[in-house]
Image 1: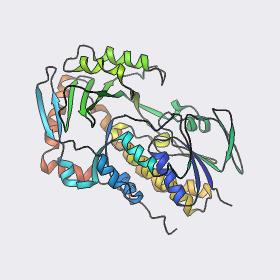
Image 2 (image 1 turned 60 degrees about the horizontal axis):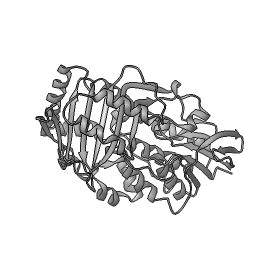
Image 3 (image 1 turned 90 degrees about the vertical axis):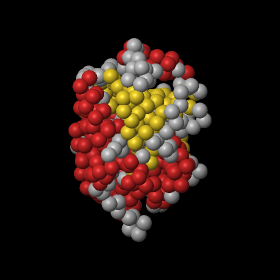
Length: 398
């Protein structure tokens, strides 16, 4: 008899997507999440391609369209706030229509979780501390101290996956660090709004930006180059904020005002910009999906979309194989690995120019940005990079 019960670790993007499709295909998923509730905050993402295809299949497009932000302009400013250049960020939407959205990552996660919150078991404020596999299933030990038995376990728990560490080994052997650290946080009642604009100030090796959110909130986004990965504990928020203050102190524009508001933020986020590259996404009855298995990094601009597509394919292959995890995991990788590899290569090529290291590089970036939003260039870019070379199979009749 094939697998039926599946424990999914992680309540981000891939986790609830996988839970939705597994339940639809007749499986019994359970979600476990370390946080006490769905997480809020996080940065805004552009959402298109295969992820949007999955969202349409799940019937969540109306909710996404309601939650989407209409970013009309990308504006670069100098240290005094004077405009260097401004480009029309609506050009892509003019080409793609409703197939190119800007949404908060936490908003997307909330909408996805809403599809399953009333239909499956969710264990909040808990995590996995042990996995013991045998030929018939996996005994899972939780941090709360109890144990449960599942047919399969899937790690959808992000770049720093607990499941990957337990079943495959330490993160360092799979991580490719791309030389950046990134931070984001929300601010209440920031006095400058610039509705519909992503306002950015760049100096060599550093970029800070802000954009207006609903309910009189503003989001700050910071990224800086660092040759060596900083030795900071993942949850050492005090040290992370100290790094940001030291890094952006004296850089002009609104750096001081934004950093002054950082301590009051309830949704502070800080992490490295890295990819996860693995020779296989499964080990026995344990599999990985989303950033846990194949994080493309934020440089790809498509991590959430790829996570959703991967979850859709994994669930579909389990259905097609009638719960035979060996066949399903092989089918999952056969259908999806080359697509992921292509996205990771594209992000890797972009890594060196994301935040320029020199003043000349910043100037060149500004000129290229102006060209990017010329109609002819936008059409070429849209066809070249915004149309995913993957047709999702239909599993409803398999």
